[in-house]
Length: 309
Length: 309
Image (tube, rainbow over all chains, first blue to last red):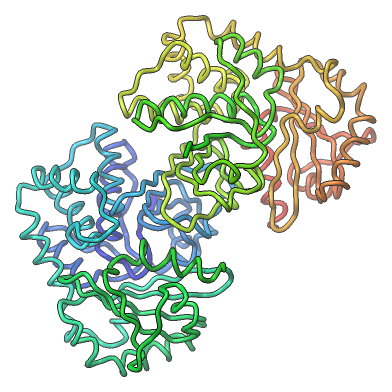
């Protein structure tokens, strides 16, 4: 039975490309009966990357147990970010670079997690340790995930090791990754072509914070005014989504990727968000988050702490 | 501040030696401010191993937060098997070969888990991948953990890779590991010198199974009659311990390491144990478990499934 390999729901470029690069890792390890799939359609940025490196779009699955009993998770571990019937299949492998939560197994499991800027950085290490070949295409896909997650090495999640890996991937891919990366990031910020619903779903993840159902979405842009012009409609869509899905808190972070600043909107109790960031919402229902670009490093930890406190 | 490295409570030989071998790994990685400690005194088998390889006994700690804010876990991940104040310190690293449960972090963390017979097998791989030196002493300590966890490669948890690692450790240690291993295992089975309380505590671990507080202890012996002669006193001690600590189920597995069979006694509801193994307790309050030698592979998974069902 084919083992399915996939990243998180509302997949970003790292989630989609990791499934592809880790499936190739498994094949080189002799495990040929694997398929890279996805829990959602690729976004515009990811489509640009897949097109550029001539990689077909992975098949989208809604559930896993109907076709396999064996899965491997990349770029996530939390149950609510994964396939909804995960408890009906066996997790064989997890490769990730996030916090660990809502992840349990009945039996031992293979896990490789490192505190690096992208999950593809972890997979890159695994290739090197195993002595596996990294083709120009695989190097380009790895680099796309790394560029996306670190906003071209600008995010505070970027480590020196990510910079070293970036340089090595540039050699292996044989292209100018800085030039390519800026094109790829800009391809993901054409907000006028996206609906309000798509904006609030596009890069959204759910978190259980001390029993509270928290949803956090991130929208990348090169001009925050594009977001401000649509703020009212975005907040209406957030409200409808929170009511429908039962989110206690829905936080949307709009990030200016050129200037490395963010602004937040919220549906639900604002007090924990204000506590987390030590500041108040303004009279336009916005909370300014200067220097914040990483949900993982700059949003989830302080918010988790606020809910614990 | 010194980072403390330790294995699980009621430490066995793999838990204690992994703390030592992973501390040396960290030192070779340039992280010199680390100390291998333990959450309990070494048992007779472990003392034999430490003596043999001229390794001092690690300091025993009861809590961590009073002396550090940084820890690394080896050979365990579940909160109830770890230091009681783990939520007050930051877990920097986990190296393990068990199921994952009751483990959460607020931030990303380094984790290396493989489905191998001992945690030292995982650490051995990490040394090889990093190109670190394995001294004869470290090789001997790694082998001691592997021999203990796999009952000299006889347990069904033993993989082909463990056998390959065993052969390589034999070269590195420069001794006959089969001869050494049998001596080490026998050193741990001198039951006459141990109190009933020590027998039920010696290799005990707690598990949360669907909200039920389950305690499972394993006693290795070369003669099950030694256990049968003390069964009544052992069960009295189990009853007192279960009442005191609030265990819903306390299962003790006595394992004949020469013939690879076990027998179980229980305090609490027997029905889940009978369901797990598909057989009944006999009129001497024993459940025969032929071929069962591994708590991790042959006891925890069926019992977890029984509590879920």
